[in-house]
Amino acid sequence: MIFYALPLSSYSAKVRIVLLSKNVSFHEIEPPEGYRSEAYRAIVPTGTMPAINDEGYILAESEAINEYLEECYPAPRMLPTPPRDRATSRFLSRFHDLHLDPSVRALFPLIAPSKRDPALLEARTADVRRRIDQLAKLSLLRPFLAGDFLGLADCGPAVTVPLAQLLLDAIGQPLELPPELVDWQIAVNADPAVVAALEPWRTATASWIAAQLAS
Ligand SMILES: N[C@@H](CCC(=O)N[C@@H](CS)C(=O)NCC(=O)O)C(=O)O
Image (tube, rainbow, N blue to C red; front, side, top):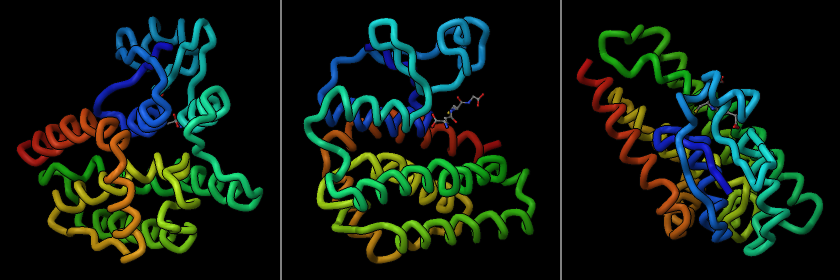
């Protein structure tokens, strides 16, 4: 399986967690000539990353990829069995992709000190804190977001919550996680697949933030 990804991409890290958890044999490469390029669109029509090529089967969108991996590689399972917990897991994944991650991503243009608009910064940091509080309220936290094992619902927030922490640290407004999420983060960070999947992302993100702060 070919995995199109970049170290700096948080959605790539979200899928990498599942690939490593399930011990899938894969070859990670950067999109040829970059995502959105003609060359990459010839393979992945949306031009978006991450994507996989599984023996000629092309699939983009992190959550679709993770669900496909869950079906092709059922062990260890990453979706709960009871229908309501399963639905909650899927709800949390959508909450992450549609609300939490876009809120955190909206801080990117404001990290460089020269580009900080105080009013915008205040509004966007407040929005991130609101979304993090919502994540704590909406999750099952047993101690993972949708149950008692690392599941698909954890994979996005496993990257986006530390991203929010790093970005808010960079602007001097550290994020205090709700206590339930502190326990969740300890459990997630104890998982070897999460540690390995996030390692390239942590290095690339630290460099990007340092470059922004110096600009
Ligand atoms: N909804 C997508 C989001 C992934 C995403 O935002 N990827 C960025 C790179 S990190 C991208 O491909 N951007 C190109 C575009 O949107 O045209 C997913 O879950 O895979």
